[in-house]
Image 1: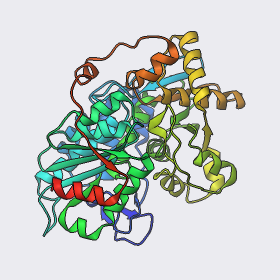
Image 2: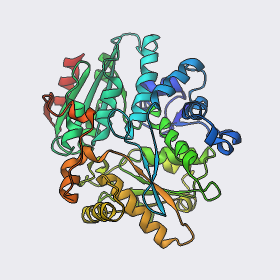
Image 3: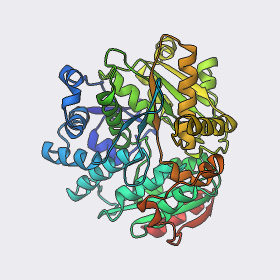
Image 4: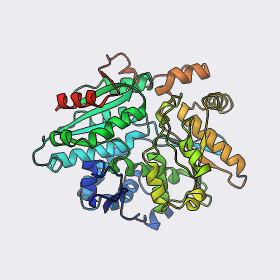
Length: 441
């Protein structure tokens, strides 16, 4: 499998090259040259196939021969070695719980897969280029969960430094602890700005020719194919547990940078049965507005209680458009998007807890309500699922306040809450970032 840049001004890249570079030289996102189709047997017999085998068969065409089959099977086995249950909330709606991994968030899958692939390439001496350091510097912006997942996935990996930019005061206390307490090769930068500011600084670093002569930079955001592609796995795992195989589900995905839902659509186009996708957004409504007007107008991010979705210019939406060949009628048939306010989010959290005894985190609540509203307006579509992307404890300050209910801290969280935070505070200024990066090298 080869990959082309969506800006169409860069050479074709292999999976290895696309993973190592992160972004194409022309600053476009990499995209597979074709969409491989999964075996029909995988779909018809999915309940009898292990998650490891499902993941291996889904990802193998995208990786090609870049990683030996036994190595790739080991990588995917380590990537998916935790529970991803589909839990019934009520008669119409189920929750796909993606928070049972090491950092209690859906991004564990992509971060674990990418870190193992990049670690493999570094060990084989395939990541460094002549004239550069033999180390790889992973540069990533986070609106919340990406930082912790990447930090955990790359922690203590030889030959890899990780630099994480996060917006000061705009991530939860648990999220901040997860990305600022590891040390070693993990470096956290607390930015005086928004997530969009952090993302812009990262993009600027990748366009800095002088810096890229000194450092080997790659990205661990969902723009990287090795982060984006494995997110297909849990959509297949969800279908494995879906009882109504003759009635494919409607799936609502809490959406910020749109890598997650984009992976789900890719899985569907590879052969996974899905009735419809809903991009559930908070007050950052660029995509819901686009679906109404067909005019894409990025905005400054608005701070909400579902902070991991506070993105005003989602990077991966261009991949969704590419999946539908830039044809809006095709997109609208399979994809819709709704914006949910903070007040609606809080009301949904209360109602679902009181009525069904299920605790939603703020992102899951956005997904639940978007799905509920869609099903209400489409009476022929009886059932669906939403993705519960993070454990409620990651937002305990919001959840406990809304529900007036104490959440028990998992062991993984208890272990870090009293550790000292180690982060470098910088303004949203590129020269400040560049100085830090040079110091780390």
